[in-house]
Length: 105
Figure 1 (cartoon, helix red, strand yellow):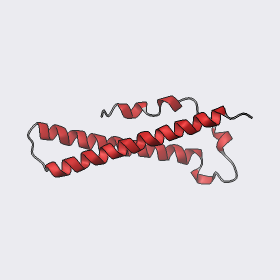
Figure 2 (tube, one colour):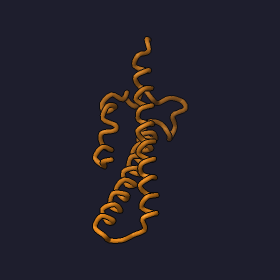
Figure 3 (cartoon, rainbow, N blue to C red):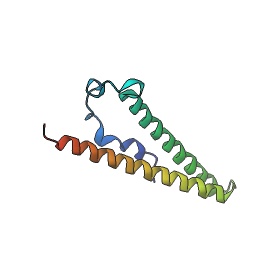
Figure 4 (cartoon, rainbow, N blue to C red):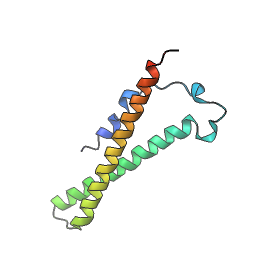
């Protein structure tokens, strides 16, 4: 599990999103396209920070700096689950986008 892979998660969707005008409507309000983008960005940042904390804990353990092994394992599992959830969410969003693009008008 590499921290640099986080940046590559959204790569297939980059440059393919419709313009903001197409997503606005009577129900868009404050949680429209900008709200969704900030939600995704915030989620990526949270997963990235969890991965960095877990990695720094592993490095500390490898260097013999002590620490609680049980807490480190819990942080590693939380980071792993968060990353898996992020990847599944990305896959579902990508599948949905592909389904929309296949629709005939």
